[in-house]
Image (cartoon, rainbow, N blue to C red):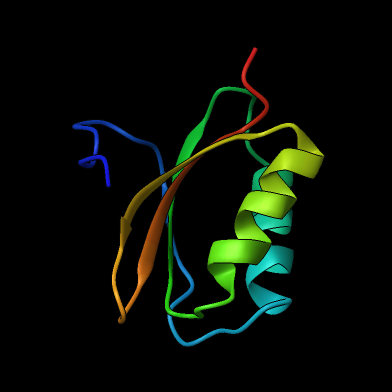
Length: 82
């Protein structure tokens, strides 16, 4: 996987939460962010590797999987890039 960029915006640590709660919390958080904001999302739910990319695609957000292991997955979500 790609390495983490040096700069990003807020971190949304959703460890211990399961989908659909993971996606619902990302959606709620993203709704209050300006376009172009980069959010580091951390999830321990294995299904987030399916649900988060699908959510990002449907909402028009850019998404990069930064790291994936058995313990967690890290995504870099860019809110509807302009």
